[in-house]
Length: 218
Ligand SMILES: Cc1cc2nc3c(=O)[nH]c(=O)nc-3n(C[C@H](O)[C@H](O)[C@H](O)COP(=O)(O)O)c2cc1C
Image 1 (spheres, protein in one colour):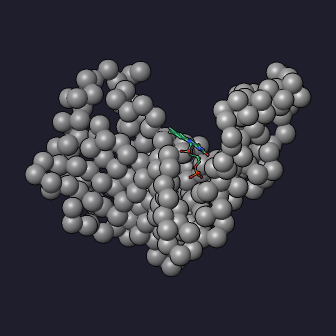
Image 2: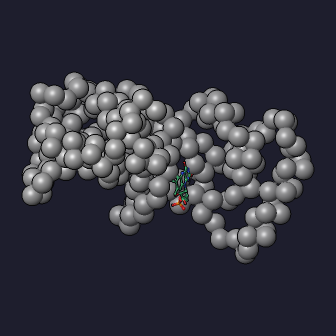
């Protein structure tokens, strides 16, 4: 850890750092990269890549949960999950999605809106292979979001899989498991300040793919 600053002092520093459009990177991914780096360097933030993913049914009933961001670049923000889960089925019927990074100790949040699309099987497999053996088995063992009678049942499923694929043996990618890439339409950078006079700068993507920045009232 290169930054040994007291996180409380750091928060004060960020709280007084105003955010101006002229200081922002030209595109929201580059700006996200700046903030993500600062967040990751702050020991007060436990899992900087944890984000809240909100989805909705086609008739507008929302649901939210935390997932881990596993990759981001100009193409979007990627997380991995079970396609048969609640979020997976909601996204299959309605690709509109919101992501929220709650970086409270920095008095910051980033909010992304956009559309989610499944990653290719190759990309999914490449990531699956980097997961620890136990997590690979866990992905098979869990019919995510479905009702199960007991924890014992889940452990029994896991034990069966562990016997079938002992440590060191390659575990195939579960067909129901994979990535979603969220292609952003808007990305808001929110910086808290005293007296609720927060900065909110929102990038919006135009038809031609260029980005503009608007300031929103806090
Ligand atoms: C810190 C944290 C990280 C998580 N990361 C993931 C993840 O990367 N993928 C995932 O499918 N679930 C993850 N979960 C579990 C989800 O929050 C959720 O319980 C699960 O995906 C089922 O959600 P659903 O029924 O709404 O589809 C995580 C939970 C927490 C608290």
